[in-house]
Length: 213
Image (cartoon, rainbow, N blue to C red; front, side, top):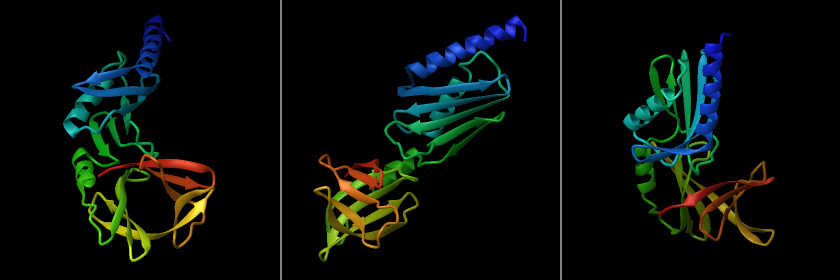
């Protein structure tokens, strides 16, 4: 490797570290580059955390800015996006320059999310809580009581929905909700003091769905 290539390799590493260590802003949207790795000039893989969902034109513009932030030219650049505070496990979107830009939304778009958030909580029973979850996929949960029984209805971005019955039990002195049909992994729900819905299993709490209207 010649000195010119070595220089840009070191520079790329420094820029990558600096980017991952600080938050940035683009068109009023805050984001953080949490990982920026490259393999020579073959490919570059970047992970970004956004404060909020973006529409596709803004996402494409930000993807181009991040792609062009490195002075090296890569054959392919892959950018994966997460939403801050949504720790359901998967990426929200991917923007791949291979070499031309393609955009894939793995979670709900801005319009889909707003529609899901605004979906009705009306039920035939007494509602005791509603939550937005992105565990596995984005969906809205509504807890209600009807005829002495407890149900949680889940509504998905395509408008489909389904309800499951739960029973209230005490675990470690706390009231929790257990699937009436049972669980192979000891999973249950707990409504905490803030009104959020905690997902619990054999190894403790593993996810929290935030309350919504």
